[in-house]
Structure formats: structure tokens, C-alpha cells
Image 1 (cartoon, each protein chain N blue to C red):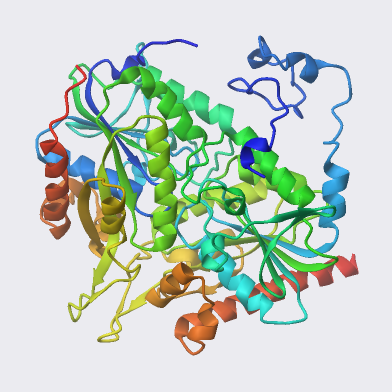
Image 2: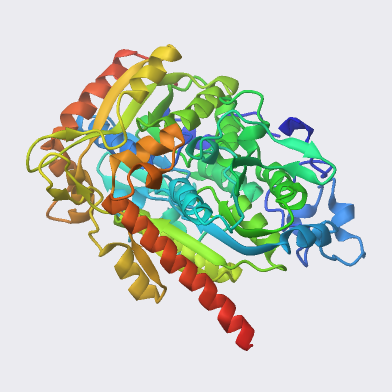
Length: 328
Length: 274
């Protein structure tokens, strides 16, 4: 199945300043004049929820924990961390893990998890994800492309359609303990869609990845602001690429200098949990390029320990969440 | 749909886009350095930041507190130096931490407005640099649509980092350029190698050579590699009225490397639009 088969249901692309079909002014806004879809939007039919929502909810209710991996900034290690988190959780054989790659224009997870070039299968129960190991499934648009280098030049609406299908049609098995959702940088269509589709079932929270320099933190502040607006709990912030130890002389350099105090200071300022910092290790990048598990190869490295510590703290946060729910 | 050259480009001689499929490879750093280098070479430069949800350029140039003014002709960009002007959505936000949560159509409208309503000044611009967000989506389609009527443009500088994961995304961006007929000026490999300040040993943190291989593979010009230099971040963060970024940059090692890269582009001697 090629992405071109995924249809867009609008008659025409939405106009500039489209208030969105769920909005109160849908069909009545100035921007709606002349839009071919105006009649649909302005009709008196109650703007009920998306008719696909019950099905999405049914799928998602089988998943115990849902975690979003977010960052306003690109290239800070969202996908790297998603892959690490997946490996780390999947090390526990009793857990079923799913990883979903929502970066549609630049999917990296298949390469990092060593599933490059695979394709997904379709069955009665839906799309079957690609299994990287017995208990770790992966879903990415890259499995649907005829050519790996093909550019996906899609506007927002089309991306939303695919995200919806990912949530509605992917069959993760009878039970899934963790679904880890990797996102593209920014605060736009993908983020809005995934949060609004998952809202009813509930998201455990978001893990925010940053690097220490202020230029990255600036974008991360925006992402935190987005989470607050969207009502997503922030499980914590992890600071990636903090400090590099020269393999030759063991001198530690701050490549991305935390001139404003880095992730930890940001967390204090905004009163959110800081989960730890992970040092830059060139071997992480190499493992990602070859799709191997970093912990298996370098279990004793400082980076390995740092990542596992972050994963532990993250799980604490999630379980803390659950406990508080029970009391209520 | 209107089929005319966006107004603000009337007096722009050369347009260069800075693109990369991957985020965080240094598009904004390369844009900043390209602008500084071109200004040092005596050109009149304008920079347009179309990364709407994560604008970094105001911070890079140390002008976060400046504001855009509205004149009768349109928006007046921020003057960073006498011959360097910058326009970014970052200037329009009330609070620097505010998020811009926009779906595609609104982003497209903003970019159209940027190209229509910015007044780059009476003096013609020698170069307009356009910094883009990662990916191949709304912003990219919008800018490609707008620039369709503004040909000839010089083309795009593609920025990558050396590791395979980045190269894969960058290939997608190159395919995008082919589809929309953007000339590719060449590939820059950023973050290639880090020289330990204590022992001078060079470590390839994100491996190395990927950019050069890619350009050979696809028969594109290889513009050069830029090493990781923590001093650049330091320069950005320490700039103020006494320590002017462009003066500090002139004395740095990066300037020499960047100057070589820019010369390669200037040597292509592309025709002026005006």
C-alpha cells in the first residue's frame, strides 16, 4: 500500500486561516467565504466528535501506557532516545513494547532499530507492525515507501490522515504495555493531531528531550508551553549531548555549552522533573546507524548507565501517575 | 491564485535557501555564518527565518529583544548591522517562551505574507538567505510555490551531519529540490569532527565523511565540512554591545573555513535577478 492511496476527505485544500472544522466559527469565519467545504462546515449538524474516534479509542484502550517523546528542537536526540527507551523497556521479557514514528517527512526509527527496508503487512485485524525483537514492534511511514529516498512532500492535512490511520488501524497485539510515540520537531499538525486523537483515552505524559545550549532550550520552552496548552502532563526533561569526554585524554568538553544553566535550570524555573543528562558518546551514533542496541554492546559505558537511570526515573514518574489515579 | 513575483523580492539580486531534511544539523548556524561571511565580504544581506514553530535566528544574532516595525509599505525587518537585516516570527511573539501552535494553512499564509509584505529597504539586497525548518512539508511547499514566480534563484545549500541517519533524511530533501526545480548549490557537512581543546585529538562524534560520499553519489558539489566548534556557541551567547558577533567571528577559525565555502558558491557566478 502506497501513501498515495491514503485519501484526503476534503473536497479542496483548506483555505488560509481555516479555523478548523471543530471550531465554533467553522463555516462562518471570514476565511470560509469561497471555500468549497463551507457548506459542510456551516451546516447545523452538531459538530460531534470524529466518527472514527470510538474505533481509535478501542485500539488505544488496549495500550496500558502511552508516552510521547517531544522536543521543539530538531536533532536533539528524540529518535535516539525513543530507540534507547524501547530497547531498555523491551529488555524486560514480560513487557510488550510498541514504538510509533510520527516523523513523516524524516523517519529515523526504522534505521535506528535495525528494521530498515522492511514492510508492513495488512490483515483483517489491521496493519501489523514490524517486529524488531519478540516484544518490540515498530510502525513508521518508511515501511510504506517504495523507495527509501523518496521525499514525502505532504501538507498538514494529509499527515493528519496518516496519523489517524496509525492510531486506528495498527494492530499491536492483544495487549501492549508501552507505546512510545516519536514526534517530529516543532509544534504543528502532527502534535495537534496525535494529542487530540489520544485525548479521550489519555496520555501518560510527555518526555521532553533537549540539548544544553540556550538556542535549543528556547525551542523546548515552546514545546513545554504547548504541553501546558494541550493539557499533557510532562513526565520530565532529559538533557542529551551534555559534555563530551575525549577518548584520548579524558578531558571533558562542553560542546553545546549550557550558558544559561542547561536543562536542569530550565526544569527548576518551570517546576518540572529533571530526569538526568546523557553524555555525548560517538558510539551511540554508530549503533544508531547500524541499528544495534547500544546497551548490548557497551553495557558499562557512562552513557549506558545515564540512559538506564533516566529510564528508571521515567518509569517511576509513570507509576506515580497511576498511583495517584487509584486514590482518586 | 496570483501569478506574480512576490513584492518584497523586487530588489533582491540573489536568493539562497538553506535546507536539510534533518533537524538540528545546523541550518540556522550555517545561515548565521553564511550571513556573517557575506557581510564581511561587503555584500548587503537579508535573512528570512521561515522556521515558524522554532525560530532560532533572533537568538543567533543577539537581537531577541528587537521588534518589527510596521510602515506604510509593510514590515520593516530588524537591522542587525548596517548591511544585515533579519526577519523572523520570533520578533512577533509577546513572550520568548510562547509556542506557536499552527496547522499548515496558517503557516502557509504567514510565509506568503513574509514574502509579500517585507520591506528590505531602498538599497537592493545582494543576497537574501532563507532559513527553513526541517522536513518537506507545508513551509517548504509554500516557499517553493512563492519562489516559482521569482526565478532565477541561486538555489539551495544543503546542510547535513555525517551520520547515516541524517544522510537518509537529507536524500529526501534533495529529491524535494529536484521536484520543485531548486538548483542545489552544494552540500555542507556540519559537525564533522571535534578537536579536543586539551590534547588536539580530533574525534568524529557523529562519524565523518558522510556528506562528501553523498555528494559524490548524487554528483552534487561538495562545499566543505565545518567542524564542531564550541566557541561558536560561546560567541553567540556572549555577544553584546561591546562584543560584536561579526567582529568576534572575523577572528575565529570558522571564518576561514566558511569563507572558503562561500567562495565556492560565489565562483559559480550565478546571474543576478535584478
